[in-house]
Amino acid sequence: MFRRLLIIILLVHCANSVPAQDAWQWQDPADLGTIDLGNKYLTLTNVTGLVLSEILSKNDTALEYSNRYHFILYGEYHREYIKRSAISDVYLLKGRYGYQFKRWVSVGAELQIYYFKNTEVETTGLGFATCYNWYLFNKDSWKFYFDNGAGALYSLKSFPESGTKFNFNTFYGFSAQIKVNRNKYLKLGVRNIHISNAFLFGDDKNPAFDSIGFLAGIRF
Image: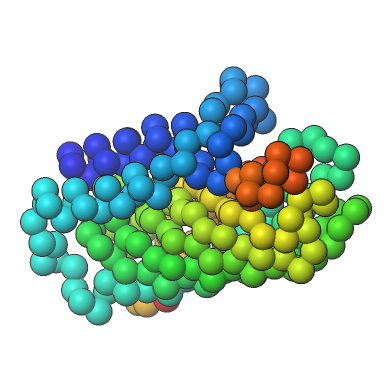
């Protein structure tokens, strides 16, 4: 019950908050309405959930020490869904080191390599993010969870075209892991990402990149 309540709170909050930008409106591609993603407190909500998990729940003795740590190597593809003069594609390679904090939540740090491409700019970038997985189901043979996080990145050229080299990145979505052998899981998921500089360099220097994409990789 405690786990499900925390996940519901995070889902509702993520429908109303992405910390990268103050006044961004997402018109969802299914035309179900406009969702305000203007709040800055997504990471704070995750941390609050971790604190409550520690205070209000008992130690999870079923989790073996050796199973608490994991490494995930995976790739993502994203295509911009907001129509602009040059629709961008983004390819990512990510490595995440994670810790199973409780059976229903894990935390991690992620190194990200970006490749941006459209008709106006082609560049690469390097990013870092903190990550949080909130498990709806956490079985030995398969797992399904709400995956979200926030960080920053730097690219060799400004991205988007009229933006800056330094940006923040946020993401959220759902992922599944399917056990393929004793120590490996196949990771698959769908994810929304947002890239912008949070108006640090002025209103006219903050074009945003927003997309829904897919990911696949291996957890060790």
